[in-house]
Structures are given as C-alpha cells and as structure tokens.
Length: 460
Ligand code: ADP
Ligand code: ASP
Ligand code: MG
Image (cartoon, rainbow, N blue to C red; front, side, top):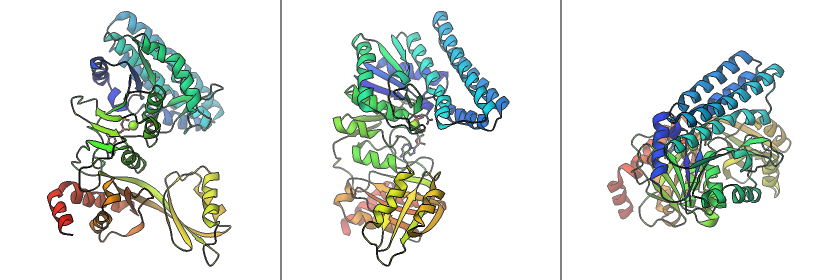
C-alpha cells in the first residue's frame, strides 16, 4: 500500500480537489489518503483563537461563519444529491460545534494551548470530510476516518509528540481492514488526540509528519507528499528565482534541508520512514505528470556540489560566555539544560574556548532562558538573523566545497559558521537582511554556473 498526502494548496478550491480525485483515482495500489486543511484555513483558525482570547466574540464568530461558507461552497463540488446532503450536514455540524466553542472561549477570554488545538483541528476535520466525499463522488469507495481516533500523542499541545506504539495499534484495527476490503480510507493530517481524548496538533506543516507516521505503521511501499511545486527544489523559490528540481535525495539530505527551512517537508517527516527505508516522494498535484523528487536511503553518486541550499529566516542568535576564566567541564551541560527545561530547541551551535553561540527559532521562552543563564554566564542576544546552509553528501567527501561555499559569501559578515557532525552541511548564520543575497550567490555558484564551477573544482 502507499500513503498519499495532499497539502493545503492541493485542496485550495474545487478545481484542486477534482485534481486530487484524479490523482488518487489513477493509482492502482491500495492507498491511505491524508489531507491538510484547505489553503490558509489553519492561519484563519489561529486568528479565531486570538480574537476569542481578546474577548472579541463577535469578530471571532464572524470569521467562523466565513470559514463555514467557504467549506459549504466546496461541498457543491459533490454532484450526487445524497452525497452532497450528507457532506453539508457534516460540515454544518462541525462549524456549529466550532461556533459554540469559540463563543464560550470569548466569554471567558481565555484560550489555553489545549483549546487552541481544539479550534485549529477543525481545518483538517472539515477538509478531509470534503475530500472523502469528492472521492466517493468520483466513484472511489472512500471511508472518512476521524484523525483523533487514530493518531495518539502526548499532551504537548501545539507540538504534540506521537505515541508510535499506540498509533500502530489504532491503524491496525481501523485502517488495515478497510484497505484489505479494497476501500479508500481518508484522514486529516496534523491532528491527533491524547489517550484521554483531548485534541492535539503536531505543529505547523504537521500533515507531512502524520503521513509519514501512518506510512511507517502500515509498512507502506511509498509515502507521497503532493504539493504545489515540482519537488524539492535547489533553493526556496520564494527567495531565489528559477530553482531547479532535485531528482534524488538521501534521507539525511532531505532531513537537513527540511530542518534548515525547506518548508516543502515538515522536519520530522523523514524520521518514521528512515527506520524501515520507506521511500518518500514529493510530487506536484498541479502537474501530476512531473517526476518529482525521490528520497531514499541510497546516497546519490552524481553531482559535483551540494544537493540544495536552504535558509531559515528570522532566527535569534544567543551568545553565552562563561564568567569563569576557562570553559570548565559541565558548562555546556548547564547551558543546554536550561534550553531543555524550557523545551526550546536550538538549531546551530558553535563554541570557542569560553563561549558558545546558538540560534533559536522559537523565542517564546527566551527572556526566561536568558535570565537563568545570567546566573553563571554573560549573555547577549541578537534578533533578525538567518541561517543559510548548503546540504549534500558531497560536502563530506569533497573538502573543497566548504571553501567554495564560504568564498561565494565573501564580503558578507558571518556571525557563525558550522559544519555539522554529519559533515553533510555547511551552515552560516548572518543578518536576515543579507540572506537573499547569500542564497542568490550560492545558487548561482552551484546551480547556475555549473560548468564554471566544475572547471574551478577541476583546477583547484
Ligand atoms: P503544502 O500546503 O503542500 O504542505 P507547503 O507550503 O507546506 O505546501 O510547502 C510547499 C512550499 O514550500 C512551496 O510552495 C515553496 O514555496 C516552499 N519551499 C521552500 N523551500 C523549498 C524547496 N527547497 N523546495 C521546494 N519548495 C520549497
Ligand atoms: N494545516 C496545517 C498547517 O497549515 C498542517 C499542514 O498543512 O501540514 O500548518
Ligand atoms: Mg506543508
């Protein structure tokens, strides 16, 4: 069997959903379909939560009504009267429930992370209903499943951690029998629930992660991520003009690119696939005939330079200098223990004898973290930074590439430089305002001036 995940832009409007039905319909293998919320709906639901928290009940409920209408209009895509009536009834019930919740939260002017997850989950619950009905209408025997009965997580609302074993069990009993009967299960991504039944979400972009988890549990032959670009590109198309499709990537390369900002994949997507070696394919639902990107365990042989470059913008750099003369052992442990306690991940780390610099993306707890670090270190903070990195297996085997990366950035002030333990990436931290130029220069060097680059490497 395979897992087919369709992102928000693949279910943006009626045309897009028709394309999904076409793509799912031409596939012969048994398949589980995972669906994101309709494009922009998660943002709108987070805004609803903010309005409710401010006590702005009228505006919050107006936004819920607008979302209700948008989903109702989508229901009109189903042609069979019976199918359309039951879809409309399901949509009405969902938005009726959401309205009640939002009204109550606006009255008390309080939206806990748990309530926020409850609100946000409606996006995937509604979109997956619509896609299931559209598939049925297209003659495919689909079955809608409530993601909250399948994906079991812990209670870290907003960034819940899946319970793999419990989820395996649910998939075995709820999904395998449907597949065996030739039915087509459809489930919302991103959403799960704790064992006690509280709704949770996996973090932004988390539908990819759901798809990969389900694929690993069901020992899928392949996990397909259908999106709005032709695959993993050599750079973020919003930053660099005319990036190319990368045909093949190793799991490690794809993970690092996702981790350092290639939004096309949620950073955790690859993890469940790695253990079982399940290939992950990135495909374009707007151009299903394009070959896409294939991500596998195999390390690609070809190519002279990095596989792709990525950037993560708007990060904060924190410099932490030991107030003791030398970096006594235990200093790093002390530092990272503080970040751990506040559940704040650090992305890039560089050290010198008495100081360590890290970058942080999630700054919600940063003031408290800096306060604690000040007990044993001098700390400095600089917002408005960006991480730019070149990723590729070649970086490990060809030592000249690091120099080539750095020389392309000549003249730009670099705040940190690191070549991670895997040595499959070279990463720099610079001012966010310099990131587009840095990306453009790297892209030109490795992907546009390829013949010149080959000549430079040959003569070096
Ligand atoms: P979906 O709704 O399908 O999950 P996303 O918006 O999460 O889609 O991811 C697709 C987007 O990721 C693309 O439209 C593109 O703008 C962005 N992106 C950033 N970096 C890359 C990259 N290296 N390759 C492809 N897309 C990228
Ligand atoms: N709808 C969620 C989001 O926008 C999850 C996803 O699309 O993957 O973040
Ligand atoms: Mg996404």
